[in-house]
Image (cartoon, rainbow, N blue to C red; front, top):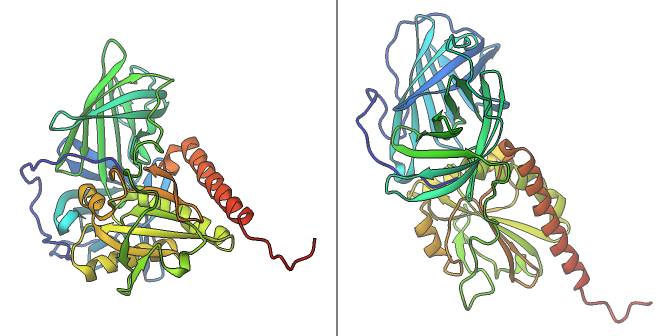
Length: 426
């Protein structure tokens, strides 16, 4: 996920949640309706909008979040006496809402690095969102755009916007050097475009105006504490740097060196016998990171396929929480979400600079996830920065192809390198 600059702003809501512990409040109650709801998260630049579908099976409630073509099943749903709680344990975030006059009103609590929280106003009403009565779209943004995001300190980073528009309806995503912004949905009204999402981890809102030259200029809000400016220009040939060139081994290294504890506290190293003569894929990840969730879904699928061919996967988990027990709980929730069978190690805090200090062989850590391919001899063969998830469509499919091609190559090399048995016949 791309890094974001942060600045504090005045609180938008009365905080009724402290830390990462659930809270409740009294309310006037009525019947919670099943079916589709339209939901808003109130950010400083406007509302991040998404769909919410509620259903009930006997006494149990289920909920699904809808962002464009994405549907996310909420892992934990509790409704009792007018109080609704939606929990996303693998992200350590939650929504607490009260049913008042047929609508849900409450807050989204996001737990960030070092256990700090953001509490943001949440509201939902039953039914699909009604079409806006504003003017029709002044232009069709469908296609590929060269984008630059500008942080508070004036630093910039490149991106590519890929949009699909039908009438006023706008879908798409942004790809950056370090990841993508996943599934975004919104609208184009007049000369103003809006895209937003909530996926259990982040609340994003992108807004921009189209000028007379056909260029976009606007703002990007992440939660209620991060704001970036951005500009975009239509460019079907827009390209980003090769992700395999951004991070490399420092002089004097040809191998990755680390020793971190697993969830039982036992130290694990690449020099352990279990990894000898194995192809090893090491990924730098975190349970808080949506791009890491996208990657874990793929790795959990690939691991059983390649394990018997001599491939091991190790996830180095850099968590938001310094408390070891709390970090272990987060990684365990992450493992359970994706039925992970490969090794996960507690590697440190979710800070790229500090992460790089734990891995001195690397030139830098630019992104979570970063994926490192290691051959049977222990040599690093490729370092891939970032991950383009399923929200990027064809880019995701190409990335799967590149990962499997590299694994197939390394597995074939391992097989070809086996020493023949001299006692064997011709």
